[in-house]
Image (cartoon, rainbow, N blue to C red; front, side):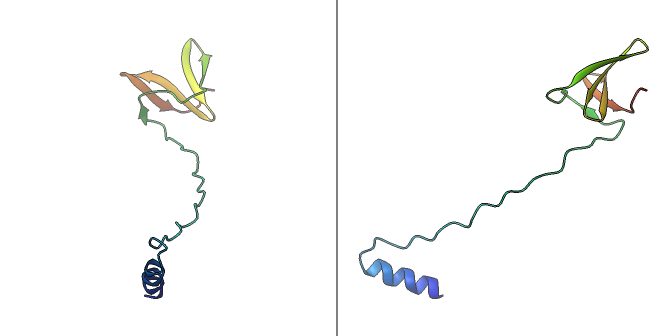
Length: 80
């Protein structure tokens, strides 16, 4: 209520209205996404690498491993 009264008083003094400052921005860091085996993704994450193990091709990013699966990639357990 006090803010409204101050804005009304300020606008009557030819200040052109009352401007309320926006709240400060808060930085929020999210945790990395961890997929469980069996989860299917459409595309591999940026920076993935190709791993060959016993004639099979795997793709890894961090500690997550993927194999090709029906137009996408399925998360699998570490191959070795």
